[in-house]
Image 1 (cartoon, helix red, strand yellow):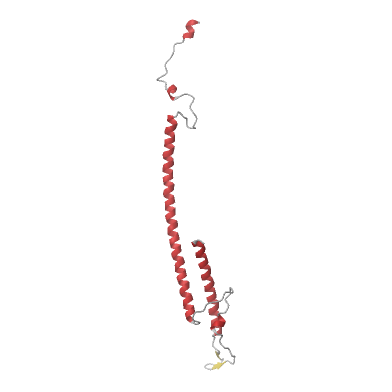
Image 2 (cartoon, rainbow, N blue to C red):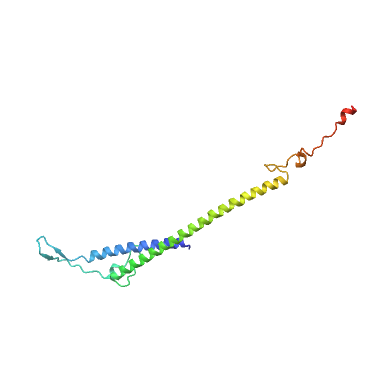
Length: 169
């Protein structure tokens, strides 16, 4: 498993835990609402006759949404603090990894640009060397052998021969 897959898995796990925590907090708040309510008459509190027994902490945390058993270490608000701390730590690790990846990508891009420049320089040197070799081998710009060798093309070295046919005819 590569690092990107691990980061994606950690992100999904964090999202699942945060969603689970929000659901748990909503159930907890719904159960812990006060049985005492304000009456219509000012200043008088009326005790409701509903019998709302609070569910045990293990009863509320028995089954999260994805079917895996939930882990409640303390059974009180410390679980909430722990979940927030773990979520914060995970978020910081993800941000740090993203920064490291971004820096590595920038470094690799700079190396790539340098490599491209070096390749261009080397290609230009090769083309110059090819031109020199073509001249030495009497090749034209298309890589074909010239019809006349270089020595025959030099007009200074060509010697005019006498026309011996006209005299004997």
